[in-house]
Length: 222
Image (cartoon, rainbow, N blue to C red; front, side):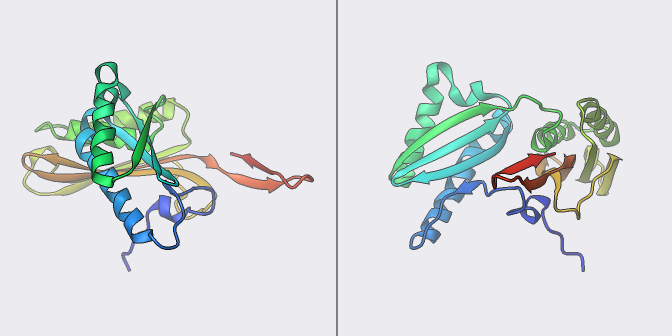
């Protein structure tokens, strides 16, 4: 009782793919450790400033390709591409192989769960911030953008109050047990001076149904 599964992990192999796209028979442990190193290095350096939403890693022989989806790509790129060159050089020194970095911008911030969670976590760092008012505002923005359902939870010493509590609001449907439901989930840790609080966001974008036509090709409908 009480064990919870991440909605992203729950749907792996149904319609969602792994964020690390590679296969290894011998060096699996080394590759996995390198993936952790890459993700932690980029998150520690840019997650709060650039708003990193997703990091995808793929391998091709001796080349590692890293795709970064973020809210502010200019911070990672730097002036005339100087910052991204420094990051790739640092990763190459740590890993001992060539690293190629590609950066993409997230266009719809209000319908991306990680982007919403990052923005809420930044606002919760202000002492005296009204968490329920913040949650309501982001739910209204997401529903206006066309999502079917959204749920936001905030836990911890919200607003700097000594007693920890949980605030949550939901609008629309969130079918968390339905495998074909396209649910975008993210959780972010908000580190304030008075303590740590957590933010969880579920966004429901409809169902994904795969059907095979006469030619054997798969049509995806959402």
